[in-house]
Image (tube, rainbow, N blue to C red; front, side):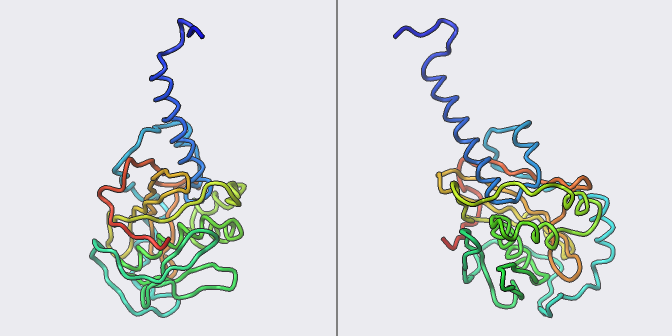
Length: 250
């Protein structure tokens, strides 16, 4: 069969198809994982693999919340407190499924409370506690029955949370592509805020990552969102897990 003169060569078609398939897989993972609160950046912006997600500036609400966080003790009595530091090696953890995604637990670091519906909360005010919080929120966000509670209780109170709660919940996460945590980078930690880069693998073989921007609020780590209720950091597709500390429970 003769190719139309306006059609690109076969190898260019193949490359374009692979790029589209890869992007579609990551978008499917985003919907399942529930980490991204708006897909605008993915559909309208850069779709090439990006290896270094960056930490954003805080919103007006979280900047104000930082000033009141100093005296907030752990909501469930976890005693460990570290106002600086990082995590560069994979901590030993016990992993349990939340829906289909494995979530870690570390004694003294969290979660200090696991409810009957599977919702996990209360994390230590330490770099490890922030890492465990980020990983657990990634898992909770993947589980549709907890999605509404996730948005309500795991985000920092303020205009962003109020805007988020007015939005319809999308991404049922009830089949198809599944996601598992694969690694991490703690990009920033000062005891009041933490930016934790969580890498994940999908059941379709794609690798991606999202920075969870955390705030110490109400005696626990919660997710910071922009004042319009959208995410502060987009999910990106990765070519590999190079640069990440490998950490997984499944």
